[in-house]
Image (cartoon, rainbow, N blue to C red; front, side):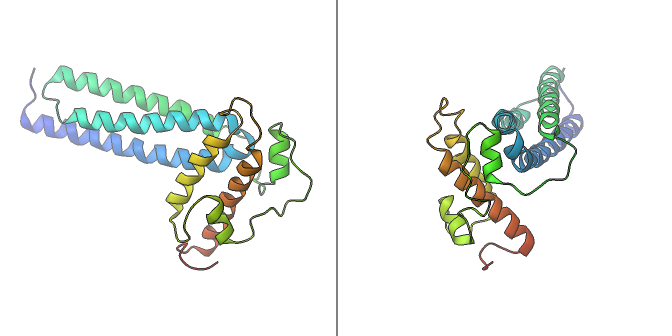
Length: 201
């Protein structure tokens, strides 16, 4: 049964609201996961990240199909797909937010790699990244990139370098340690300065 023009407009508007809400929640969940899971549950992080990115891709497909819906049965089918994606998001978001109820401590790279089974070295927790220029260079970025670009570069490199992705090969751990430190440095300093990264820290 075909929709009237008014009902179709209401249906599409409602679906677009749900899609946009879920897209925003997915971005927030991914930011939360990268801040909290990278330290204590790095293996789970990659699974959550992959799932959330798949949700974002699927939302784009649903958005495209929405323009081609003209009848009630098509609307029900698309609504069911979106509901399934919403349920999947709830599962992934719950996984991301399951963490010990304790105050977050500053990331110590030696502890991080010991917990991950990688040993780590005992040279102290100051690390190699001491300024914004070093941090941008470690992530392969030009100074002045936005926080979104910094996060995207970090995710891409961390996924490529993690031992689980490299079938247990730990030779990339020093570089992984360096980019995590660089990302944490930029997150902390951009947050403290509350300014654009084009300005000096």
